[in-house]
Length: 278
Image (cartoon, rainbow, N blue to C red):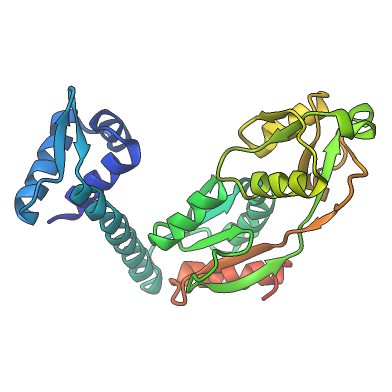
């Protein structure tokens, strides 16, 4: 059982097909199929079955893929931790929800890189569900997002205030009761907060899914409707709508596992100096 085989299995599970896994790994489809077959022989149970022209994972294959994600993540973490402790070029791996990844994290990465130019940076920006899953699988060292999932054994290294308000173009914000609401992608924490706010307000307005923080803000500025966003986004054609129950306090948290590689420990120290206090 090799890291390459486990990585291939995890890619098939993520992509949902051999074709998608081959594209993600930049290898041929026969190479993916051969890797899965070799892994199945070693495990001793079928991991995939033929489905049309491709393969579909069996329940055993899906279970092993979950473990494969963690193993591959831990191997990457171990490699970067060892390189960092030896003073060699290493990689800082961070994930952030979209709103934090577009504003907050880049502002922290710039001074970090100035102090540690030898360290590479991999920043993944995505919805809440995905970034916490990446951390659980050790695919990243740190996450900047809303409150960590309940029951998780994660360590919170910092916290930064984040106030959410409803924004829109001036004429739309003034008449927000009849406006459409622009929602983020499924899995987004801001989307879930918006849905909860609408339930509390007892209204069922038209909903438009625009798929990202920037797209929702651009749509609001263009007059498509209103959207829930950090207060810092006010301006550039956006004003605050006077919606009951707002503003909302939804701080960002900097979280990770209890044991961090040196690259991540240095990022935590710098983040605290720049307002993400513990």
